[in-house]
Amino acid sequence: MDRLNRNAPALLLGVALAASVALLLVFTREMTFLQDTWEFLMNRRAFTADALLRPHNEHIVVIPVLVEQLSLRVFGMTSARPEFVLEAIVLAAAALLLSVYARRRVGPWLALFAATLLLFLGPAWEVLLWPFELTLAGSVLFGLAMLVALDRDDRQGDIAACVFLALSLGCSSLGLPFVAAAAVDVFQKRRSRGLGRAYLVVVPALLYAAWYLGWGSEAETHVSLRNVLASPRFVAESMAAATGALFGLGTTPFGDSTDPSWGRAILVALVAVFAYRQVRKPGFAVGFWPVAAAAATNWFLTAFNQIPGRDPTTSRYQYVGAVFILLLLANLLQGVRFGRRALGVCAAVVALAVAVNLVVLKDGKNSFERTSVLTRADVAGIEIAHRTVEPGFFLSPELAGTTTLIDVQAGKYLDAVREYGSPAYTPAELAGAPDYGRRQADIVLSHALPLSTFTRLGGFDPHDAGENCIALRAAGASPPQEVRLSPGLTRIELAPGPDATFSLRRFATGEYPVPTEGAPGDSVTILRVPGDAAPQYPWYLQVDASQLARVCR
Image 1 (cartoon, rainbow, N blue to C red):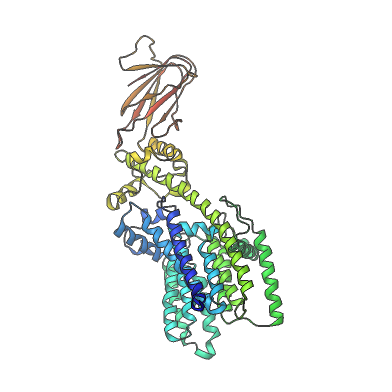
Image 2: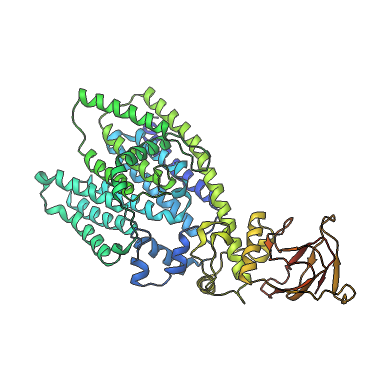
């Protein structure tokens, strides 16, 4: 029994790690490639220096691009599942390393609680559910590995720390805070171990500097005097938001309405407690200063580059902020011993926080599932129209219904599909997709084919109805009348009267999401419908006219 009690934290940590991986894989089973991942898929498939080293926003992304290229060549593009599996494993590994780091300072139970809070951090749903955030998660993973290696305090640990720091920088510029941590560690130990170990900072920093001089200096930047002056407030808000997120307070269902008020209160209370402890027992643990340097570097660099969409409450910032909050707490609590009752209270707090944060995580999952439906429907539209779509046609937010597909150009996309397979809905799958996906596919198809109309004024003959003409009921008739169209040319004849509108649908039901320019009375309009790769799913036309109208196929 004593042995079981000693091993209980490790066993529970294993359960938490397995549960986290399983939960994330269940939550992401209906998802496809999301948002910025398309920039890699469309523009960085070639194994060239520019594809690997060109910055994404302001970040170096060498390792994520290599991972994407390897995944494409091994698994193809038919499914994003391998990426979701990798992201879940990376997140679990980061939580495990956090627990190793914390265990050496605060014992196994508090280390377990810290890892559990990170594993189920719902407000950080963007990082937990979006494989592109391997950029941030990878930097955190290798940064934590560096801190664990530095704890060895020997030559082997320094060599490993150097490698891990280089890998952290290779994932994103989030590696820079860990450069600050390593530099402080070297400075702290200069008397006991000398400055010869400075290579563990210098080598990765020089590699990053070489990248910056060659490619990174051309990246976009949002550093401004205004941001610099406002940075203290931004940092304080970031700390409050991350603290509140850890404890499941201040977060609401998806909608970016995080309120850091609870986090501020908790943060103030923590500062007061540790300030009182400093009065009673001055001094900080040695490991506190490297972590403090890393946390400050992270929050201030983020503040300097702040723009709309990069606020302190942004989801992806909660993960990184939570990691640094937990690292700081592990060092501030070093040497403090918790009794069973205190550990029981901590366990209850963690359980409640996880329960609340799982609700937020599920809301984020619902958001990404909707984006996935739109993505698969929109690219299906390009594939169905592949015979006639212009290579430069792209999925603008107005067409796609989402802002996340602007990197998808028809020519590049179809080239990738021929080489690596398709992630899109098949026509049959599209017909059974959610209504918002089918609606958006119709809009994309109408522009990708494209559908077109030409109107000639006059020429309507009320007595000259051809054999293939259908007379339509006047507007307001119930049920509304629609005409099935075939590929080719369709003539729409309008008797004298007010303007009429023409709208179309294909995969959509119950609505006609594709409008045309319509036509005035006493006119003849030619509607052109190009043939495509889904002839079994015809277009349907609805004419809204108060006068006599005929559709001639």
